[in-house]
Image 1 (cartoon, rainbow, N blue to C red):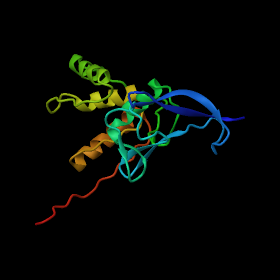
Image 2 (image 1 turned 180 degrees about the vertical axis):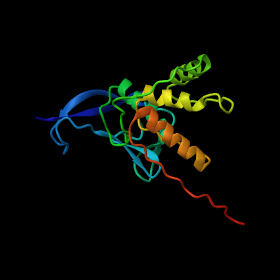
Image 3 (image 1 turned 180 degrees about the horizontal axis):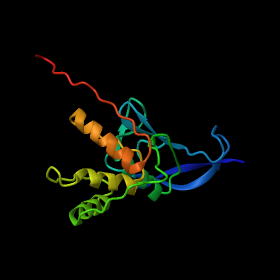
Image 4 (image 1 turned 90 degrees about the vertical axis):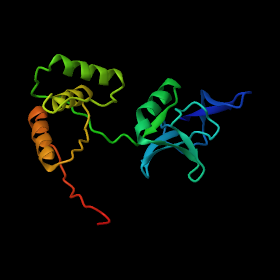
Length: 191
């Protein structure tokens, strides 16, 4: 069986686009594997297999002459994946490192209306944004609902060890799964 690879055409305007799939015997890849690969390297996303002149990637993607591939900040991951899917470009996703929670929350609490609104706004923004509520208004519950909605492993960063413990205990009780936590000692430099 021959491998399917993308062919790239340069239009008269100079832009390059993936136009179709062709069979190619010269590729040394496994059957069905993608010619485009997304990896997380050196703090950024590395997109290999797309020519420098290609103009169809999100604006966060920039050509890196040093590595002869496109790079983007990790925050552009979702936009990049959506763009490749929209363009029907097959890709190998080696950057996806999050785990999926199969069961979701085992304890569900009834949110207040403003908490439901905050979650809906966050979800409508593609799972991005900041929830600003006063102390004791239930930001943690909104975060637990967001984790339950996305069902993905999540990094929680807190400014104090007490909050690390509170988050750890809350996540264990809400999701009923083991939760890893780490506390790093802060130091002041230059004093």
